[in-house]
Length: 236
Ligand code: UDP
Image (cartoon, rainbow, N blue to C red; front, side, top):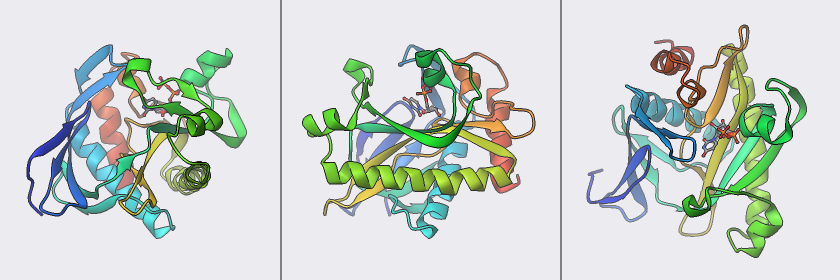
């Protein structure tokens, strides 16, 4: 598979065309943004961690029956994925209170929920990704009612698989964001990435943060946290 013209450059990744119309190459950068784009920086080695971890997790999910965009890892920063039209919803699953949930409802972080929650944000930079409910998403034709049901079921399945997987590595999966895409035939697949940029990971013993919150909150030790997650997953 060869890299052709650049189609898109996002905050953390570039996307390139290939000789196959149904496939694109994603290239992961070390650039990081947070706080609605106000905070910018780089996290050395992040692109490598996110590419490798996301690919590994997507392959676990495929084995468990979750359709994903993953095709083939080319090198430590680049991966061939199926070309999709992204459903403009950020799908957030939570197992433990943290971040915007704790802030919005005035509760502390760390409350373990009896059952996972789901919420959607409308992916729209001009509007700052507002929270949206499924009725509004359908009214705005962001997704059909059937697609919303498929996405919900897939998101909870991803949570069940990954929560158990990370617990074995001594990591609590606090919350995470997923994005879904449509293939040319309309099939919904898991797209984007699953990484310390898009998940909150807490050490199971100490609750130490092992994710992008260290960057968002200027806690230091950002690169070490990403490296530690790499070590837990790949033993390196
Ligand atoms: N998240 C993300 N991208 C976003 C917003 C959130 O990947 O644009 C992830 C974030 O890493 C966390 C989860 O979604 O794992 C829930 O984030 P939250 O709504 O608490 O927002 P935050 O506090 O990160 O602004």
